[in-house]
Image (tube, rainbow, N blue to C red; front, side, top):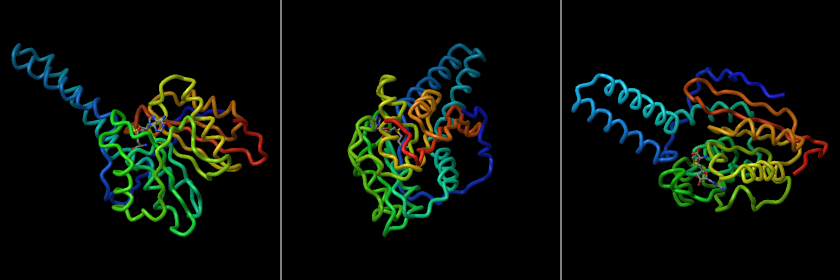
Length: 252
Ligand SMILES: C[S@@+](CC[C@H](N)C(=O)[O-])C[C@H]1O[C@@H](n2cnc3c(N)ncnc32)[C@H](O)[C@@H]1O
């Protein structure tokens, strides 16, 4: 049922140049890594031992890899994922844990101002993304030229403030793992299923817990549940996808 392979996202995609300002995911992580690099290099200078240069260089390389993922990699990956959805422009898309709008606003660029809507919900936790706020996301929507088709709400993805069957597509990037407790993450998945219309699609990218999300989606009766890698530039993130059955067989 679940594919374990990379989904071959090696094709080159050039997303539209971003005009907003999107912050850094989990900003304490790169701050901690930078401290570790300095610590190793100071030790290397003080002791003259080569292994501290090697250790510091490895942490520095990991820091560069981390920053690439948050500043550039996720835009490349989602440009491809959104293109593959082949949206008509009249859909209602919901982004769970939208933060400053990295995915939300790219999705909005696939919508038409008259009919399509990209809706983002978030609790704006600073520890999960630097400069996180509804205002920052709205400013980015203006900068990207999509403010007329974007709605930003303060809300918890474990208790979504929407009616059943109200979205065509649900997306989420690096967000669900931030919910503490397995039960909370399961609730977020069942809320996603609840607000998705029959025939609607789910695309979740996350750094951990994706096997659990896929199992939960399958347990809730979703069709075409799959899980795949996203290429070495985006390790250890995985994509989870699913479709809500048209016959109303999904449970939530
Ligand atoms: C790492 S950030 C990713 C933001 C955005 N998806 C992106 O890719 O730039 C995770 C986001 O999830 C949000 N978040 C965490 N727990 C949440 C919850 N229970 N409900 C809604 N949002 C939540 C955080 O506030 C944060 O904006």
